[in-house]
Amino acid sequence: MALGALVMGANVAPSPAQAQSQTNAPALRGPVGDSYRAPSLATPASPASNRISASPPADDALASPDLRPAIPEDDPTSDPLDPLLDDARRPAAGERAPVVDGDMTLPEERTTIARDGIVEVGEPLAPQDGADPTVIDSRPQEEADLFTTPLENPPAGFDPLLFQIEDIDPIRTDRRPARLFNQEPYDPIGIRFGSFVYFPEVTFAGEATSNVLRLTPADTDVSAEFSSRARLVSNWKAHALEFNARGLTSFHNEFDSEDEAFWNVEARGRLDVARRTNIQGLVAHDVRQEGRGAIDAAVTGDRAQVTTDSADVTLNHRFNRLTVQLRGGYDDIDFGASGDASNNNDDRDTEVTTEAVRTTWEFRPTFSVFGEVETNQRRYNVAAVSDGFTRDSNGARYRAGIDFGSTGEIVRGEVSIGYGEQDLRDTGLSDVDGVLIDANVAWRMSELTTLRFLARSDIFDTNTTGSGGVLSRTAGIEARHAFRRHIVATAGLSYTDFDYDNVVIEESELRGSLLLEYYVNREWTLFGQWDHINFDSNQPNGTWTADDLRIGARWRQ
Image 1 (cartoon, rainbow, N blue to C red):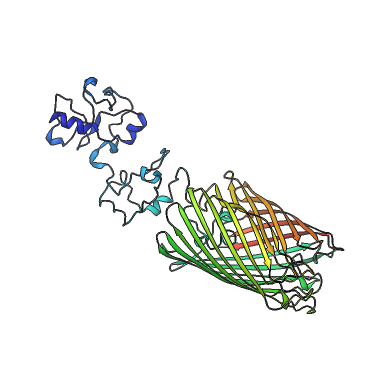
Image 2 (cartoon, rainbow, N blue to C red; image 1 turned 90 degrees about the vertical axis):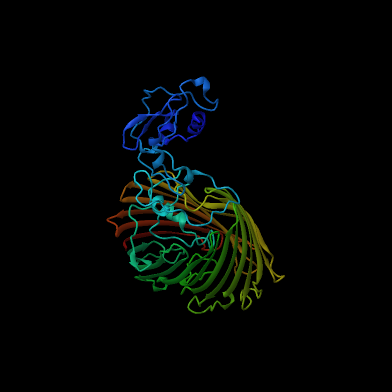
């Protein structure tokens, strides 16, 4: 029986302190807190102590080959007061030890890599009532995550902005890479309404521009600007809802045709069907004025008002490391009259439907590869006035890329390369195709500096005589640096190339920007922004430059 007790005692797992020292401490704390020695082979354990020896026999020759030799009785690395050396006080199944200062790793269950096909079911076991909080961490896992840092892929923790419905479209609707890039000294706290949180924001600014009409020769002007935003977000454990409303109004001193009257309302939702399945959706109504540098925009006179109604739905399902996403969308775009109502723009009104399927294989939470196929159908009410051809078309996009995840604290976002084509139904126009490059990646280089890489490629329609479309490619980089905790600067540079199909039109845009923000406190921010735009075109009087300066204040809560 003594030999059986020896074998059982030899298999007792070492404590964390023992693992660090790579030895087995012989001193164990007794029931009354006294330090006592584990009995030797000749002296069996006392029944009153209910103990089994944790040390191999004194004679190393009798020990199992898998066991280390007995350590000296005066081992300086052992701590006789370590509570984790008490077998009766070790975390049981479903419990976890607390993470204390100096720990370089997390509890074992947090660092174990998930295996394919393993599905955890049921609720975790509740900690035993009356457990010592210095030995057993009784906090819910969600609360413990706020104060621990995983080794490889730290979760974003509790995001005060509650970005929870981001997988509708990985490029257009995912705000989490921008969230990492725009890390600020103060996060808005919001106003709680039951299980919802309300985030208000108001901005006042003045602007001076050197070329308000984006023409050559240039005309200068100044304007006042007011914008507001309101977000109402649910704070639920399952499912999510979000409502957004934004508006912007500006008043120019001389050219009231450049006044802005923009507003947008949007609703997002996420339905958690199962642990690995959810449905996300978005509906939006957007009204804005067309920019002077946009494709087919009016050069002089009133700008067209563009009204867009959108609806998108996405099904996400994770099998194991494989995730499948199905997307569908609908957009109804209506262009108002422009150029002193001389052009009603009815030939630009469009209905667009899209369908897409994406498959993603996750190697680890911060590195996945994906492939995507997207199709679209574009329909116009009337033929183009410029040449009499209808712009109805069917298109396809094929992409493959890398996804760095959306919750990491170092890198977020994705980058892809692919091929796109738009087949026009009217035989009088040639099809448009080309290579597509897309990216939306934020990289936090340090606690003070963040980089963001942006790229966007797509085929847009045009009413230019004889051309069926424009292949637009944009690439840019932004850098954000905190000189002090409350003084943050952002610099950006981007280049856009417009490739018109079947016509000799060459246009490009180079844009640079500088932004300086001074965070007065959690609610108020003062800012100044300078933008330089250089638009180059081979068309008569098509080349122009502009410098815009904005100074203002922003309040949010």
